[in-house]
Image (cartoon, helix red, strand yellow):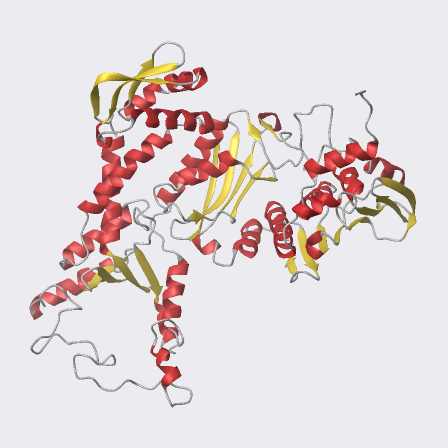
Length: 609
């Protein structure tokens, strides 16, 4: 078969298969062009999930009439210098517009600030018409209709309209987070309108995050500003008590470019490994800034993947900065926990007396249940502690003598100024009720003590080399040469965790010691898993996580059990230890250890505000 030159249209359609995967890809490329043109306003309109219509309008610098034919030609760009490693714009490949024009009906109408009128060019399935004069304001309008009409086979791989609409929305949100000073609007027949005004000032970026990630995010966020060897990390990350069931609210940006990088995601997961359960995810916006020469954004035509020259440096910066921030933030509850509890107390909330409403023949109020005796009435006042059979549910400690109570009250007043306040009661032998100057705090004693024991165990374990158990016979593990070399280069670190290994000829390592805490273990699987992790992330965190998991199990069994009555001094001691221990807002399994209800919210429940 003879070799022949492909047509320009065919070349563009092949490129479109890499650059334009779905309507969201088109929106991303067009918004990038608008932002590179220094637009302060970007308007996006779609229909049919973007398959029928995508229109992007900006007020940027515009395209000169004589340059419009170049704009729809491959590898023509104004954004790239002679150095491919010095990329300081979002777009640079010069492939997006010709790729779109090869598979759709593309219209570009643009006007520069000094032009007497606009100009328009049309591309339909690779066929170009124009440019010709048109009427338009300064800036650029790009309209894409009937996406993939020229390659109908691609339409079979599109998801439903709702899924494509959601993907477009996600792209706009990510761009909006990266550029808070720009106004973004998103509308169309297939969606509700999204309007994100430009944010300026010191809190502009945080205000934009609040609009994208939810109004509760700033209340539950921790600011990070760290730098290491020329790489800077600015971020807003959630407290361990504020999580989501998926990672969709984790945004990462490299030099202002939204990216989906597995190394960054893995580093974020590792930073929260000790404070979140495996099925929960933090909310985060990470902004990495570094010399463009230290990161390759030309890995894939879609420009969503990046490759760092020193991935270990970036990983260490993210993990170290987040862990330090979580530690310095002290103990902070999630505002969602309090909100959920308040909603449960409001009429119509779960377990509320309003649940009687359906069966009640009363209008506008719930009927009280029949009186069931002094021990069973849900409306009975709290027991005063007197009378036969009375339960000391509000005070597990015997009532002090009257002449001693004044001193205790004065001491308790001092404790109410502490973050978790002064212990006032223990209810159901598991929940400590404490009072601060402006709130009510409810603590799960088992979960809280479990975290305290776990952190103490970790400090003891990692402050010195871990005990190792010598194998009677060395275990020889055959590996690819690259894996064996990686393990050997990390031998000193592994030794600290109790795993002693050394090279054993080409393509093998000999394991002589294993961590005593692991007991009997599958050495072959352990070493191979470590080799895979080192190849993927250049770290040995997996072994540390296994040891930490054992410590967590020990902490669970060694902590204060539910059902144990505590004295007042024991409860207050637990509260003070929580305040001094990083990460104590959640237990080892990621559940909250306490909930705080502000006095103002409680008063609103009772109609006092």
